[in-house]
Length: 139
Image (cartoon, rainbow, N blue to C red; front, side, top):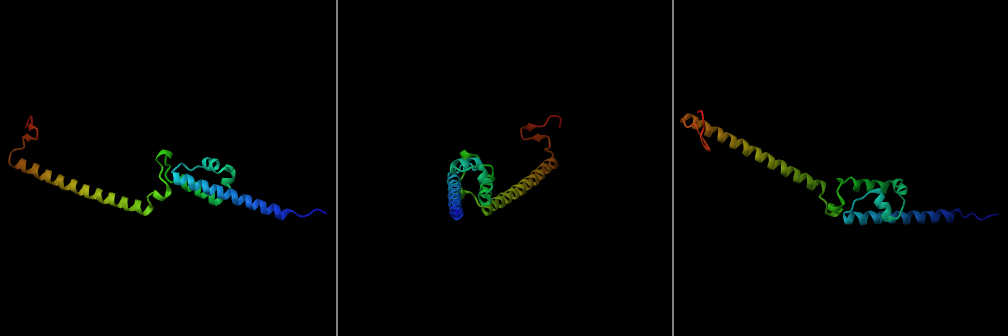
């Protein structure tokens, strides 16, 4: 009768899985810290694991997709995760930009009203034939 070695095989497969998982996680951290593009192919090559294995690991797959979709950043201009703007920071910047746009629109309206009043006063005083560059022809 043969000995049952399945427990040893299961333990070895578990160790191999953990080693492969740690290699993939390490590769993700290295690529993200370097600001490099993160794709399944690049992670597989860096970690020396198969792409198909990466696709069937839900946590690894989700992290690769999250990093990959962070804006489709180009490898040359990438910013590591810890240096990227947070959602809250981006929201504050958007709010500030919107507030500045409102101020500019209000200034624009104020200046248009001032210009309209000035042109109206020029018409009333009979100086309507003068333009900024000189007299208007045909007036």
